[in-house]
Length: 160
Ligand code: DLZ
Image (cartoon, rainbow, N blue to C red; front, top):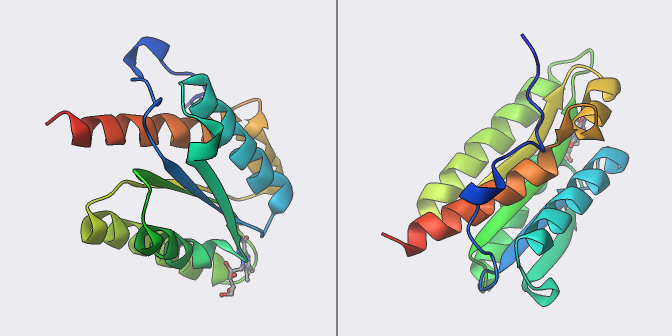
């Protein structure tokens, strides 16, 4: 099966982000990948009209800490959506499974608890090569996808 280009989307379906405020939480683990995800997300938000002063980027040590980092931002207030960016690469132990379970469950819980979009921008790959391909490489950038998802979810909540 061909892998989707994560940066390929129909621009006409994306609302203006001019009046939206975004928090971005970035995992420092595999920073060469997560930094590229963050750049992709910020670039996409700006492209769709978000103001630079309405995008706040914060860092946590690893992907496991993304949900709590996101919760800190939600509690601080002032965000319409919070984007969580991480990269978990499968190693030889079960650590991969535990981190993926933790960040996935934590993100789902935050969405429902705060009634606020927390976007799951976490790459979970077997190799670093696969992660690089999805953070600005041949399969696009998951940061772009996460930003578009954030904009669409804020728009949906405002237009009901
Ligand atoms: C410990 C660990 C390992 C082995 N691998 C990753 C990884 O591939 N990606 C990632 O984001 N974080 C990893 N971590 C760190 C954990 O997410 C977490 O920061 C630590 O277990 C401390 O809670």
